[in-house]
Amino acid sequence: MKKFLLTFLVLLLVSCSSAEPVANDIVEESPLEVQTDDTTTTSTTSTTVIEEPFALDEFGLELVEPPVEMQEQILELMKFVEKWVGLEFIDNPEYHFYSLNNYQEYNALSYMDNFEEDYEEDEWERAVLSENMWGLNNLSPDELLNLQVEFQRCFSAGSYNLLDKILRVPIKKKQRKLNLYEQSVVVHELVHSLQGQHFEADKWYQEMDDLDDFTYYPGFVALIEAQADYVEGKWTGAFDEYDRQTFNSQIPNITCRVSLPSYFYIPAELYYNFGPLLAKQILKKGKMEALNTVLYGYVDNGLNTLPTSEQIYAPDKFFTDERYEELVIDSIEVDGFTLIDEGSVGALDLVYLMQDKIGQKNAINAAVGIGGGSWKDYVNDSGELLMTLKLSGDNSTELQEIYDTFILWAEAQSRFVVGDSLVGGNLFTGDTNFWISKDQSHIRIVLSQNIDLLNSISSQLNNF
Image (cartoon, rainbow, N blue to C red; front, side):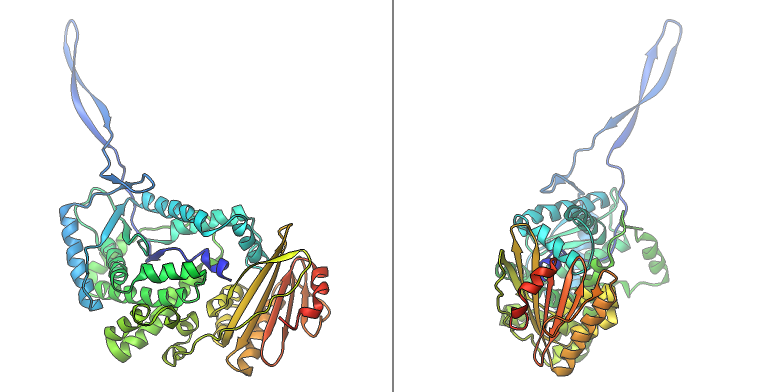
């Protein structure tokens, strides 16, 4: 599961869209006298002067120099952010301003730069194959990578990088001040910069990366984004009718150049739709101090106390601090296959897998009943995958609901044919074979590209 979501767990905390670029070159016209035998005429010629860039980023992309007036605006916006968050900046934030084109190019280049670090040899191909087998897409590795790069390019309007701690925002060039829309993006990202200084964002991300376990990433990011959205809302909420019309006219019309799969946006739904709902309840109970206390959770109490994605989907589970069960999944012995990867399963994983086929409501209803989950993937020399998944529920009713939802998910897909039962479980056959069973305590799932392989391990299916 981690490799599905790692595709979208970029180092950026993002807001909405941004502004149009302006040309880089300055054209100067100078008079030129032309002497002839009889007369003197005057004409003009155009000379293109290449403007020297203010600075370049690590990819050689031009940065826009913020005029003094703009820097003064940022200082005022910092004071606004401090007022509403209730914390003060320890250091002045570092920021990079880009033209819109260069900002989008930065997002694409930085994703590809990190790609080599995030994925080992053949790991991306296995991640894509696993998505194929789960029915998320039928794309090749190159096709999915191209779509993911486009998603990075067109989704973000501003960002704060958890590791290098730089705030990045696209703005219009040749202006003395940020317009209203640009200011709203800067406010959002300044909140993230302030969070980075107080909540040790770089350390908790690095710890997850070192553990190769991002269980607590989605829940924590949802509340980080909720705080930034709240403060941004306070800023835009002070607009009068004229400001609102001006603001709306400044929102750029950014569209992706190709159609993107809808499941790409499922993590963002958690961050930007469900996160603010929980944050609203936290603020109602204890104002901003209470939300800051939650966000200090890593600093004060460590990684395993951070919010889970299930707690974001179901706020009652947050207030009772319901945690995932640590579920052991045993290995199986398969001729020619070796264990290649393993990890845990959370609520967002289940929504991510099932929402596109059965709808958000059904997927979330099942996901918020998860007790715990674990998975193991096996691969052979030909690159074939065998995937095993084990889940528990909060109780027998929730376990049954998760099981029924997976059956609904399988029956909703024309790629499957319902086959005979296999060792007491339901078998759906096709290019991918999906087997699922339930006893009083657990659900077990196996996906295989080879039906003979499933038959060969039938004696182990109810025991992992």
